[in-house]
Length: 239
Image 1 (tube, rainbow, N blue to C red):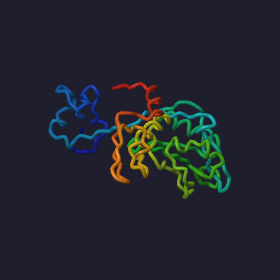
Image 2 (cartoon, rainbow, N blue to C red):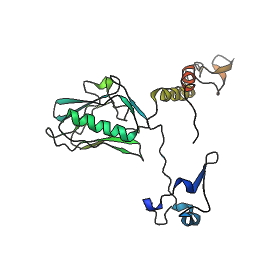
Image 3 (cartoon, helix red, strand yellow):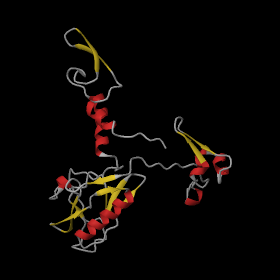
Image 4 (cartoon, rainbow, N blue to C red):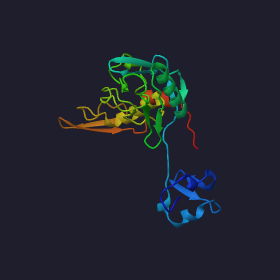
């Protein structure tokens, strides 16, 4: 809430100063709020920061705990991240610890809260020095952490020189089974076949006119069986 539009920490409003109306998508500033006069002048001076996702990352031994990388050309190293449930800060520490133990360089991994992307960072003090991530050609790609922290496994990182490798995709810490349930729900909308949608599970009625014309009516409120089984185990919280 800053007329200079720098939005430094001095202008950050405490939670006690405003109310969020979730149903309307509105923010209400309380009359007695500190630093409230600027907000009353113009909404163009307001900046909102929002981080989506669950923010919890699960690392499982032998499933998604490996990082294959190189500090010296053609010499593969493997870091193993300890099994556990992590928030972002703790996972960054675990990544640093695992990478430091596997190689000779020192690592200080980061997370961009605006883009929700991890970056693996090395000081390249050991080895050739290089810092190459083996995101597809590593020995342990099948049990790697790459997808969990947003790195693509379609190709190894081409440039081995940078000290900082940012993930290709955002990583929000969404449980894998919940992610799969959402994908199944979204997929049913696009599940069109040569039968014009005849393969969808939620067909209520269908009619045919002529040799090729078919009309389907769907129950859009039904959920795929597997998705429903998953979602029933989650508790909905409103904050």
